[in-house]
Length: 299
Image (cartoon, rainbow, N blue to C red; front, side):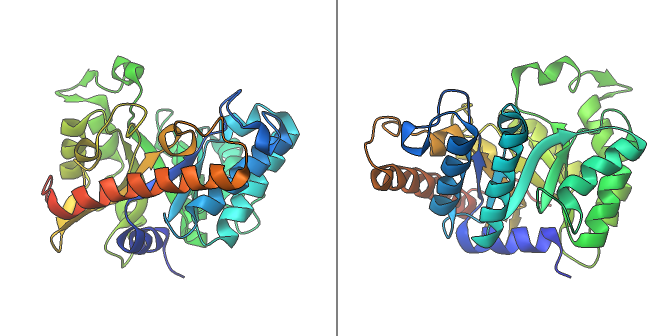
């Protein structure tokens, strides 16, 4: 069984480090696809998948923006997950789950099990209730060759309220990553990279470099690039030099590639598709150029 980490790195090496975020924001779904309705969200998400196929290796549906539509919204998520897998894209479900016992097992089964209703290759989880909350996800990942994406240092402005607080001489996010060391090794197996991934925002490049020192084998999921203001150099700050390139994860772009200027006024799905493809290719080129020439971090 090929690990999630191996599949992700192979895809990033072939196509570049861009992760396409599929975030159906309220009021933003074009009328071309049915507007901000469950059917419109599903059709729009499937169209984003079609634009990303062959141009990126991974997509990241934002679960909460599907969930707001209730059961039909979750069926839309299911359709997007299935379409992504059929298109050869890895699916990283951005659900940020975190709970204890059987509740955590239910969340893990929903996204990572062999019969998951929302078939995903990895899912984001919140570790701040304790390491025991991660165990069901780690077990499903081990059993099914999946990944677990743990929030470490997020890109939102309020993340510093708690994540950056000093805890016995180091920020809390660093203590969390230190505590994750056994799990990182556990999901590494015989591969070069661990299938335990860390969220490390592009808005904190120095912190990403620190996290790389603490977790040299963990892949990074980097939010904050594009619409949130992070540039390619900052987004790749926590990657490390491998064979004259930077690698070590993927960089997410959502609004900047799925809602580019003019995409809300085009009159045909063909024109919309061309705009999205151009935005994805521009972001992928930007990141790939920096990954090939900027020696930001070393392992």
